[in-house]
Length: 562
Image 1: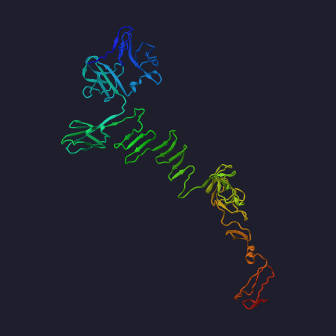
Image 2: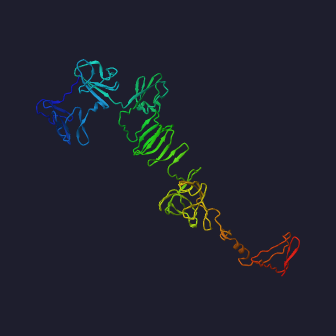
Image 3: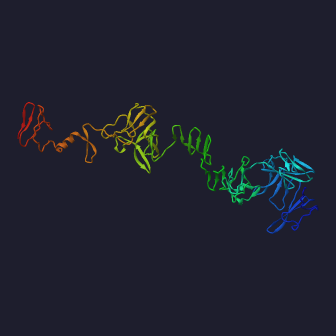
């Protein structure tokens, strides 16, 4: 039957309760004045708080100076915004709330409840997602009522007038409780039973033997194995209920988990996602692989800058500062910018260059030598074949640079975009005696170093040169007429006059050659004419003793005897 809760009340105008008449938490009502009172206790001091009411404009909660309700509207509620109590719209409570409560006051013999409730809320629910209470008593959906239409509740028995029916309708599903049931038969010896699902721990199971609930202390769970402390008797029916929850997130704005609380996925809970207070983790703790599958995958930082991009069947790119620096291609990889490594193994295709600093203003295509170093940076200046201190050349300037600025120097490969119109295709180019210049004519004279630095591959105003021979002069330099290369006392090759060196070796540099001795020897088959050449037209051959005889083809000729 219906239950009515009556509060302390008075119908006398102006009557108000005293602190001795009310207990903390008790409410008193003046039915004449339409006022409600409560008692509060602050630091041992008790007082009565009057909640006054009126029509129209505004109402104040006495004793709470920061609470003001103004311009009241239908469906508004009072809400604390962090600094004050303010009016707030409550229309969303039935349309977006997780659960909605409907309240009906019954009439005599009523069984069906539908339409608007006592608060003018229209009954609406999802079948299987409600709880029904009659006068505070929870009703069994399988016995006490039928709720299938979504708009009405039909009780199995009639109710009395003023009975109170409460319907709690769950509007947003956050989870389903699924239960798997495994059954076994006891044999008085087996204690371990294999379950069809890993429950995680004992708290997700309920065990019955012949319908009798078993305490958690009577068994343990490890993985899919349930082990009893005592084997179930022979012939007994063992029933194991395994509960799990399926969580639906599409109706939630956020799912908040504390630090070190893991979102675990999989029967064996192999995939785990969590935050430890400092770092975030995605762990694949099983024996399988962690696979990210998509036709396009991008990794971005918190400022939405692309760090890496992976495309199905296309280029995969690594980025720096928003620009792609390494991209895979059908033939390998393409690098934009510089590559530094301790060692390169394999073929190199394309130009080879080094970073340097311009020692003077340099134009594209000028030939340079290493003129110094600044810190760890090489300094380069214009090479000059006529100046040994500015040779050998180490390459060509890739792009114009002013003094003191960075510059790239090509030491091998093709340099394009330079004026080669004064040359012919195939011309070999040498370092010129004009600083920084190239020439197709090898420099002459022993003072000019001879270094071939490249070859014209395209003759045009925007032509190209294939650079070779950087870093060394030719093995055989220029040599003046009548000079020879000969080793000096330092065992190095130097140039010298052929005539001068012959004199030095024959007579120590005097004008007349002298011979310490000549061993007498007979030579046969000499020519008819035997001629001795000396420094001048008068050449004397002196013999200290004996006869110098030349035996010709037909006669003996005495040269002379002293």
